[in-house]
Structure formats: structure tokens, C-alpha cells
Image 1: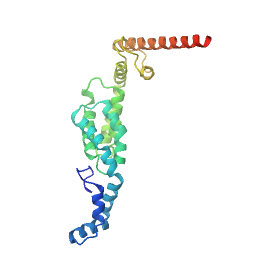
Image 2: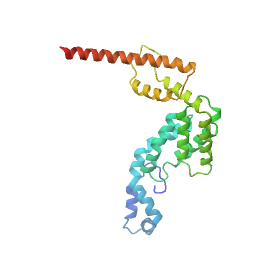
Image 3: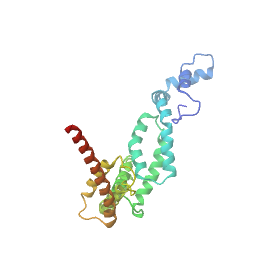
Image 4: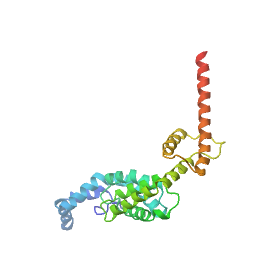
Length: 238
């Protein structure tokens, strides 16, 4: 239990506590007790178990879910963002070593992607930036800083293409079906799109087609707002 940061079935912190407090006649158990109490290494493991054992059990499902994603799926932006957001929290709140398997798989996958950036199509600025940020989590590992330099160089050389793909990805959030309900995140999506478009003097045909759809939804939103304002105005006038 003490040596295994990932919870083992039917093991509990109270078992270690009872072993440390043993007061019986068994020479073997007395020896185990003395070792657990007097040895600094075992004391640190016990403190780690008491402080983070419960939270490790609570977060075990999340750890396993992230581990499964990175083992079985191709790396995408959502997965990278999850790691950037959750891995620091998981490392802080779980037992020492509990995230080791996840970190190993994430590192292997992200390094592989970073080494093959030129072979992928449709990469966005956000994706390549997230790759760099995840690599920074492993900056102490040999070779990572050099790889980070290559990622940054790739961003500089392909900045325009990455930004264009970023805009196209944003435009996909606007429904092509004009008969569906108004998207709940329409205003936020539009604001992000406007910011992304500011770096372009001209845009390609694919972007123009997508912008027509975005404009349609924004005009519909304005019409709905105007209708609300008109009704409120008429009610206030009575």
C-alpha cells in the first residue's frame, strides 16, 4: 500500500496506521512497526498516504480516463487542453507517483506529434501552441528544450497557414443548417472569430464561405435582439 501510489483494491490507510500502532507479542509485527515508525523513508510514504490517499482514490477515475484517451486516441486540442488544465492539479492532490503512467504516455504521444508537425494537415495555431505548452511540462527531460525550439520555428514559418486553419475551425462552430436553434455560444464564438480575423488582409474562398454562414447567424441574433427591444419599448410606453 505504501509503495503503491495508485490505490490497490481493499487496501486502506487505516491498515498502515494499525501496523504503526501495533502493541502485540508478534516479533515480526513489532519489527514491521519499528521499521514503519523509525525509518524516514517509510515515514514520508505514510505521511503521503495520510495526506493524499483519499484524494487519490477520488481522482482515480479521472486519471484512468485521461490515460485511456492518450493511449487509444490521436492527440487533439481538447486532450491537450485537458492535460494543461488537470495534470498540475492531479500531481498536487494525488500521491507521489500516481500520475507517472499518465505523464509517460502523454510525453511519448506529444513528442511524437511535435517531431512530425510537418506531416499533418489542418493544424491550427492553438494546437501547435498547446503542443509547446505540454512539452514545457517536461522541460527538464533531455532533448525537450531543443524540440520546443523546433516547434516555435515551425509556428513562425507556417504562421499564416496555421492562422487560416484556426479561422476555418472556428467557422465550423456555426451551424450549416439554418433551421436549427440559435447557438448558445454565438456571441462568444463571434468575438473569438473577430479577433482571429484581424491578422488577415485578405482571406481564402473557404473562409469566405464560412463567413457567410457566420454572418447569417449574427444577423438572426440581431433581429431577435431588435424584436426584444421593440417589445420592451412598447411595454414601457403603455
